[in-house]
Length: 435
Image 1: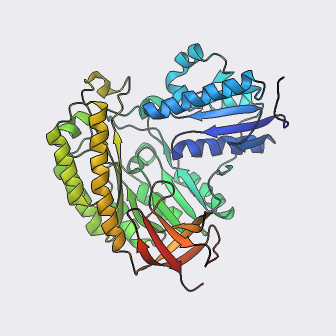
Image 2: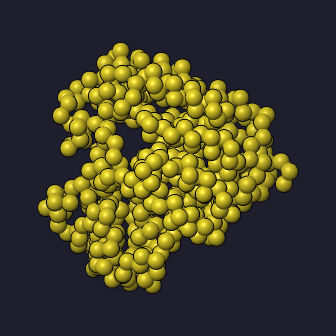
């Protein structure tokens, strides 16, 4: 017997992948809500929209498995319609239509108006900043540009997202004001490449101009920068970070590797010498800045010598936050023409080694925090603790501050001064003061 969900015409949006996908889903849901549609996020609904990720193998596998799961629900009568959008659909639409024809329709990353039409909604151009937030109400991602013009050999993003396209400053300020009026206190600026912002619109790198405009928005207390490409880094941004208290002394700057031969093959447009110089300049101009980076190990042709150069450089640079990923061989990228000659077990071993090095660095940095007081944004209560973040930490990817919930009562979205009493590799433990 077919057992359908009791709620009819409920659109369930399922989001997979990165913060840019979260933003896109929020815009989609905001449009649906403005059309008086009943929309939920990752709950139950008889109409399902899956916003997929197609970046690397693991993400693609998760997206395909989610599609198959929802198709099974459709077969069982629990779901009436299944639609697929996002990066995987943009990149593999033709293949997916052949392999999984049970999906009602596939849409790419720029097909929002067409997707809305199928869902019985009109695209409302006037909804600048109108989103249905899936993050806690006190922080929000703000996508300042779409696409990427960089030629990185390993990356499929331009295939799925197209060329760089900046959103005008005045539109982003309107979005920020709307978010602030809804209680958002922290803006996390995202793009494939923040530092390219404005070149297409204003014929110059304009991230600093954007930041100077955003700090004037009342109600916004923290602004955080994610995904700053190192080549051609606009140094005027550092002046704004240093001068404006609302901008967190935090910069996510994915570097990927440091061996010159690998950087050249990756088409990163830089060298070990230039990158090291940039890191030192950033730290000199913004004392105490927290640098987050990501690295790739196991890239085609990466030798033991290349890896040793990378490992020793990580030890030397002592990044405050670091993530390491194994190389994924992606079709239609420039690197796909290269022989993927590093065995998977070697890739994983190298990744583990880098993260072991980083764990020690993180532990030492965290021990230096003991006894200090940090202004923390409280995220949530989890188990026996309230979980907070300092300016040093972005949600979901960085360290957290744990506060004993048995002895203290705090509210999500509240800023509290926390004195650090203990520290582990990746977490701080503290007590609130002056509350």
